[in-house]
Image 1 (spheres, rainbow, N blue to C red):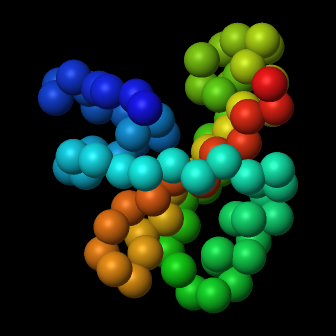
Image 2: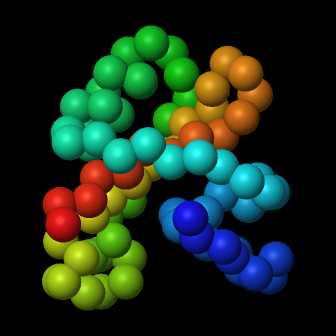
Length: 81
């Protein structure tokens, strides 16, 4: 679980205006993105942590958000560690 200050404003890392979201870890982040996108679900771009934080040690760690039909925002993540 990650907690962000209310003043935090970086939609790549945590969607603004969403008080709580659940993340699911998958083995194939790009495949999961394609699969959700093909169903018509609204998905964000994939964000790669190594690029956002300019830290090669985070290579392979990525995520994206999607708006589910239930109205909630969920996160799909990959974590190669």
